[in-house]
Image (cartoon, rainbow, N blue to C red; front, top):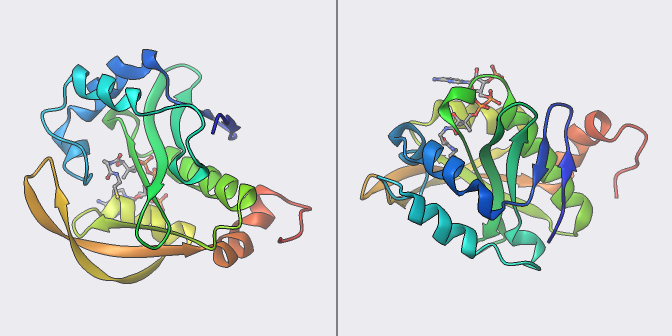
Length: 188
Ligand SMILES: CC(C)(COP(=O)(O)OP(=O)(O)OC[C@H]1O[C@@H](n2cnc3c(N)ncnc32)[C@H](O)[C@@H]1OP(=O)(O)O)[C@@H](O)C(=O)NCCC(=O)NCCS
């Protein structure tokens, strides 16, 4: 899916080969990788290049990934979807220098808005490792609901970690965010 989204402060665009250095720089940080399930640590340039090779054109909607591209700083993080057992799972990370400015709240809201508008997918799944207060704050603010606890392998830690499981339904997202993100549009 070749799509570019514009938010008030940045663009969300498809990852490209030239992002490898920035991805490796920001993901080779245990404070980032240690909060993600599928990112090894240390994280090398070769890991970023290998991941970028998987970003084939024409991937299905629920495997779309966006690079967060700021006007002055370029690619600073990612938000994207991958397939889970019940439906798409959303995951995200931001380079540490850019934390605490509301960037990820804006990026996740825009990505969900796009996915729910472009499809009939009824719900998106997510969650956080139990110690990830910042990510849980984002999901709570956006309106994700906690559905339970599980354990999930964290590659960077080499261990199973307790995970708070969450869900965002189409209905809940559109009720809460459509008036903000798409004033004037009726809920589909
Ligand atoms: C989690 C992460 C994406 C947050 O990105 P960000 O752009 O800084 O997030 P935002 O600024 O949009 O929102 C963060 C929220 O968490 C809150 N927060 C930050 N640290 C917190 C803490 N220790 N305890 C509680 N809340 C915290 C902030 O106050 C903010 O909420 P607010 O807007 O209501 O004040 C970023 O820290 C990151 O990439 N971390 C490593 C990877 C990761 O955790 N990915 C998610 C895996 S589930």
